[in-house]
Every structure is written in C-alpha cells, then in structure tokens.
Amino acid sequence: MKNFTFKKHIPEGRYRSFELDHTDIKRNKKVVGFIGESRKGLWEERYRIHFQIKKEITKEEPAPFRWIELKKRCNTEKEAREFIKKNSEEIQILYDLYEQEND
Image (cartoon, rainbow, N blue to C red; front, side, top):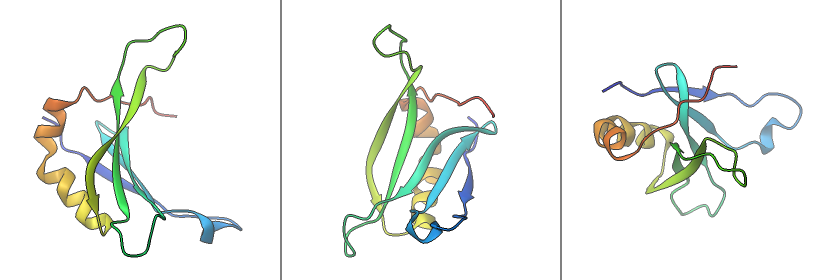
C-alpha cells in the first residue's frame, strides 16, 4: 500500500481572507482527495475529509469519479492528517480511489 502525502494550499490574492483552508491528499503524487474546512459553526468540528472514488462513465454522468465524504470530523487539520495516516491501509482497501491526472 502506498502512503498518503499532503499539500496545503496557501490562500493568495485580494480576497484570501474569505478562502477556507484546503489541503490536497495525494497518492503516487496524484490528488485522490482533500481535507476541507467548513464554516458551519464555531463550536463544531471544522475539518472534513473527502475522497474521489472511481465510477463507471455514462452518457448522463461523464465524470470518471464521484466524491465521498467520510463521517469523521476533526477539530484541526493535523488531527485529520493523523486520522488518514492511521487508517491509510483500511481506506485504500475499502475504497477504489481515483487518482487525478497531473496538470
């Protein structure tokens, strides 16, 4: 099993204060998901984990993947990263992850 790596996106530009935290989850140097911040509430867990799962391409839905969100919620990005690293093997066995092509 391959290990996951992470790349944090630093907000830039004029409206950077309005952007939410966003960290890519990578496997084989290709994006397979992300850790995203939500603005639901100040007292709730703010970080959610999303993965791209392979799916069959149809005429109605031509995308080769679909997004799923894990039920796990985290208070910090570091906590989300640790959860993914700890459960890396289980995630890769349970889900058929789609690796995005590099730009």
